[in-house]
Image 1 (cartoon, rainbow, N blue to C red):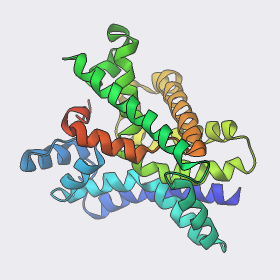
Image 2 (image 1 turned 90 degrees about the vertical axis):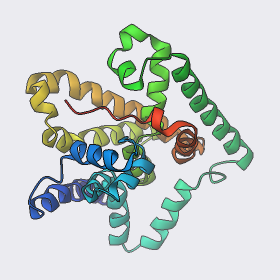
Image 3 (image 1 turned 180 degrees about the horizontal axis):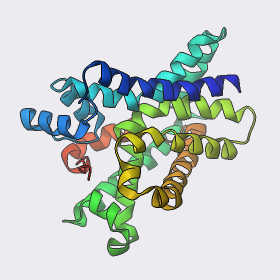
Length: 272
């Protein structure tokens, strides 16, 4: 369990570098919406949650690299933790095997068929978004009662598979933390614990971006935080199952969706 404690501590430590760098630079580097919109206006690249778009915008507005640093904190924490233990070479090999897309947990043919299922789901989500016409992804997430279950499906697929934060974080949560916990607990319990840790790791974001202030402490604690934690636990269970069966490749699914229609599917909602 020492590795897990070190990993979780380092997740916050890497995240904590962002305000430190911002302070040393004189402030203003954490206003990501302002920087993203300025870079988008300058380059014509949409200010989105696409990893590809964000990297391109960061080349114009260097402060956005801090946003990528925050998203990559779990991955960096995993790599740092593995480097601190004597068995670093074996740990790194096991980590790479876990992230290998096919063949490590079953026949390659079965894994490829599972990939086909994931890609089919993404295509269905994309097609449904087009069919729904004027309903955007963000509006569907905001008004699920009005648009119905079918309208929520593409939004769920997009938020689970395509966000730059999720893609950068997975090397830490599913690549490192989950297998460590699976040595002591069942995969289901490990997924729940990782989901909780993953959710609480976002607390500094909610403090620094004004989420708690905007909602109010009571509403945040009694409504927002429980629902957010349920979401991270649910996604953690699905993602852990995918890693165990080698049936889900978020990078592959994200690459396909980015190729199909990056601008439509990654429109960023402005902070209120």
